[in-house]
Image 1 (cartoon, rainbow, N blue to C red):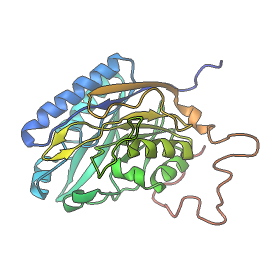
Image 2: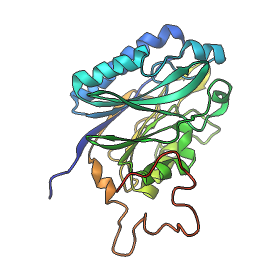
Image 3: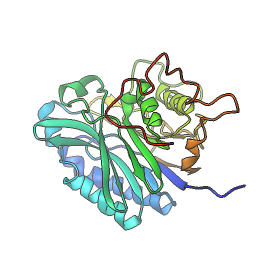
Length: 295
């Protein structure tokens, strides 16, 4: 076997951050403790859930504002950055971003050299629309020494355009930050997977891209969460297990990250990118905010 070109150990962290300004410090501390456990397990790309420092179910917009921070100057991002520098890892985490009077559900990517970039959630779920502004900065893909990293957040995975556009921009891996919430039953199949698990697997398969999906567990203010974090390979199947619905867990996967670049070539006659009918629809589905990266 040939040596991997870009060997990466990915970890997704599943835990229970609680809403409430009195919980923010303990949430942040727990995120760092679990990230440290992942780093000690050899991970060099660590993914935390959506809004992992502040919980999710705000009472109203003022409550959301009280939980918010600026990016990257805020306390949480600064401490995640310090962690990434100290342990020489890449870390993805979610928080409520304050930009003037606007609030965004934001994912940040930090690394050994500091802040790399952010993604503001484009598709807002349910009551999020009452306090967050929809993302206005597009669907960026970030070049890093370990590979090209894209981000999406929770409800985004229900819109196949999102992983498709990220993959068309050359993403080697999509980090998916989630608070998958209970919806009308059935919630799980006989294998214990929720629908979001299958949507993640389908998006990975249809785009031949790795997806590392970190979800959360627990209950807060009457809301309940689904867990079921996973790391999907370029063939769509989970690498290792899918996490439980209710336990704190860290999942690991050893992958050759840039192998995603050749994964769409299935055989001499089928190439996912070449087979797209750009004579019938625009190659980038009308997306113009970021230029495609070379493959």
